Image (cartoon, rainbow, N blue to C red; front, top):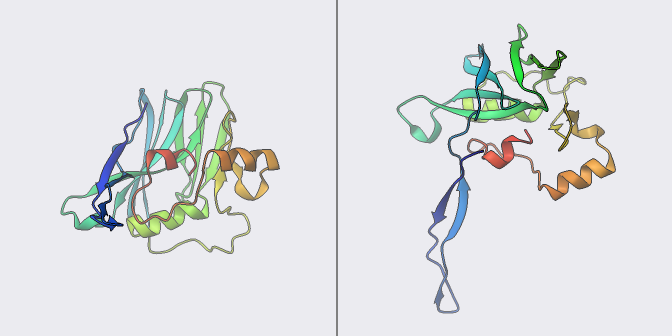
Amino acid sequence: GSFHLWSSSSTNRTTEGHQQEDRWVPVPFLTGHFSAVNDLEWTSLEGVDCLYSVSSDQTCRMFASLADFKSSKRPQWAEICRPQIHGYDLNCVLRSPDSLTICTAGEEKIIRGFTAPEIVLRGLSQLCGLKTLPDSTDSKRIFQAYIPELGLSNKALESISKQEKTEMDARRVTTIDWSEPPLESQLADH
């Protein structure tokens, strides 16, 4: 389950003498778990407050404080990414000392590690004010992770098969521009 919100874009343009209808566009809205949260991990990454959570809804989510988003006076938080969408309930999450890698474990008792891809670090920089990005020439850091529809682990986008690329295109997975927090439909792929 999830919430979606659309807003009418008021262009008030006319085409050949006819008023054009407003266009409805998706906008960022509330996101979060829809089942019990089993573990949390707080961290500060170069001054950006982050919260990792795992849940019985079989997801791991990363929330972060936004840096003066839309000139708000109150601190705002948003879900930045979903490092893991799993086939089992997730029970625990632990971050590495540099806060760029997390480990999760679920009911099947396997520990999986996830390192932040380049695209997530860019989002943290643009939305949250992360000042120092890790070296982008790091050959171990992937640009974006791909989460197969029925898979239990992520793959580097650079190493997916032709069939997985076709599936990704069919799901209309695109790169986020990070001008605003991700939409619900984008979170499953970032």
